[in-house]
Length: 99
Image (cartoon, rainbow, N blue to C red; front, side):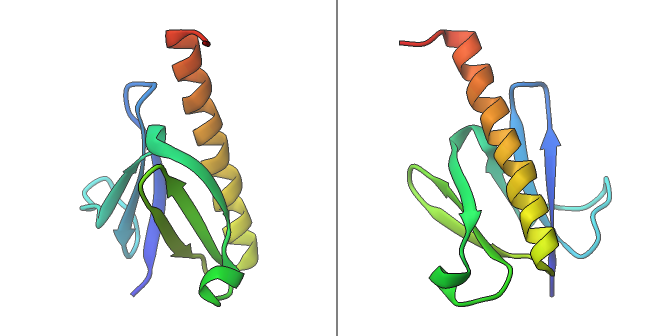
């Protein structure tokens, strides 16, 4: 069974990455949700888990692995989620200032 990853922005600056079984719809019940504000990085992970089109999403406490259907889709996820992480980080810096 494949999962669909969906980036959802709720009341900025809160951003969530939800993954749902099958096709995503408003009524979909997420199989899992990741708070983007806790994410540190996203990058390819084919060599780490020895699977094509794999990528990893890391937080301070864990690393999650996902497998896209194609290399193009993997790169789109890395790009989209990476931008969301940067926006979230910038939003937090703007809200609280830098040290």
